[in-house]
Structure formats: C-alpha cells, structure tokens
Length: 185
Ligand SMILES: Cc1cc2nc3c(=O)[nH]c(=O)nc-3n(C[C@H](O)[C@H](O)[C@H](O)COP(=O)(O)O)c2cc1C
Picture 1 (cartoon, helix red, strand yellow):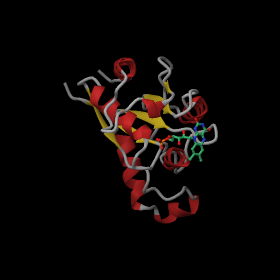
Picture 2 (cartoon, rainbow, N blue to C red):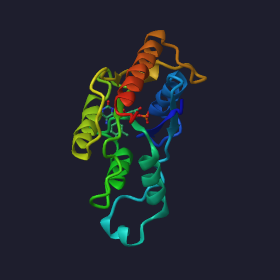
Picture 3 (spheres, protein in one colour):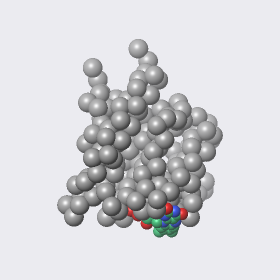
C-alpha cells in the first residue's frame, strides 16, 4: 500500500529547537503507513498580498508541497500565548490566493512543545482556530501539550522519558487512523 505523505511543520527555526527534537521523535515513531517529511518554513517571505503579482518561488514550492500532502502535522512552540510567527506565516501563505486554499480538507494534527508546564496550550489552540477557518479537519483527541520539554532529552538529543515515548507513539497511531478516515478508497 502506498504510504501517506504527511507534511510536518515545525514552528521554531532555531537549531537547538525542542520542537524540532520532538518532531524528529514523531518521525521515528510514526507507523509505517505514514511518510513524514519536515517542510522548510523558514525561507518563506512574510505574507504580503502585493507579492502575489510576482509570486515568490518559495511560496509556490510550499503551496505545491502542501497540495501534494495527504495530511499536515503542526509542531508548535508558544510565543506569548499564541503560535510562532513562522508557523502563522506558513499557514497564511498556503491559504492564499483567495479561492486556492491548499489546506482545504487535509487531515491535520497539532502538538505544542514548551519548556513551561502548560505545554503551549495557547499555541496549540491558536492553530486549531486557524484550522477551523481553513477547513483543516483537525484531530481532536488525543490533545498533545508537551510541557517541561527541556527535561525530556539527553545531551545526544535522545528521548529519555519512556512515558513521553509511549505518548508520542500513541499520538501517531491515532493520527494514522485519523488520516485514513479521509482517504479515498
Ligand atoms: C518571543 C517568545 C515568547 C515566548 N512565550 C512563551 C509563552 O507564551 N509560553 C511558553 O510556554 N513559552 C514561551 N516562550 C518560551 C518557549 O516556549 C521556549 O523558548 C521554547 O523552547 C521554544 O521552542 P523551541 O525550543 O522549539 O525553540 C517564549 C519564547 C519566545 C522566544
């Protein structure tokens, strides 16, 4: 059976990102039927409708990647109780031009990752809010707020918490089932 292509958007651009570390674990733990690939969002010019007159190549490539994906997985940090500008910009870029929203009907899931014990709840729900507008059917359960993320890895970026590993694995199994619900037979 052909694997489902899942576009993974990581909302932090920094090299040592905890979100990136968690995203890599999701890629490692995902069921075999899913092919997860991180999509670069750090190169997308800030959304400005004037640029549509001469659409930046990076926007075109990004829109095509989302269009081709069978699902979208957001891994987001929390910046001031909302999502990061990088991820919001990516959401906006692929939502336009008007009438060409490539997020439409892509089964989605969101995981927020934070050093705080709250686990980025605000960021997680900011993405859910935009997803409602963009018609991304978003997996509701399990919700995933990964708190105290700086305590979960060793110096070699290995995940040290077996509890978190089990949670991430179960999350991906649930997402696999969610994506399959939207598959055309
Ligand atoms: C501008 C800014 C605002 C932040 N606001 C929040 C916040 O509202 N809630 C929170 O839990 N952490 C907040 N943080 C801390 C981030 O969650 C923390 O830096 C986290 O490690 C970022 O994710 P990353 O490791 O993937 O880069 C903020 C960090 C920055 C840079």
